[in-house]
Image (cartoon, rainbow, N blue to C red; front, side, top):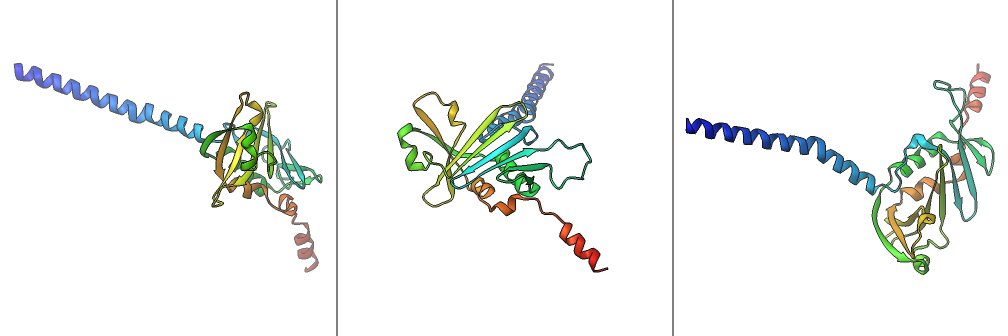
Length: 204
């Protein structure tokens, strides 16, 4: 009888331990991993929340707005419209690549510097400034500075206007951010197939 009681106690303990392990692996651990992944992201908004964005470089400013398009409506060349420097349909591929980088891009590392140290990271006169406006009218800014010593990453600032102390947070981010914005104007325009269609008709 004593052996049976001990066996039952051990079984209950094993079941309890198994329940704790299951709860941790399938409930707590995934949430911790998700929270960690979100902390590593530069921004926390989703792609569907973006209404418009502006890219400012040293020589030009580009503005883009999302069009109000009904589901299944394929009459437009692109769901995005370039508003400046010209008003024309935007390349969906180029815009999507940039938005994917903004939404999914992560901080490789962060450190704090004083305001007067921004110059050595190229953040006093940045090569690119990206302003994103969400559908709820919130705005976010990403400033891209110089590359690091081996040109593998970039120094950056995210929403610097929100900093109130003398110390500023500098991010180290992937060069994907630079690749997504530093492209010729022609690559931001939607490609029309009208010339191809006309040549095809004329050959008949």
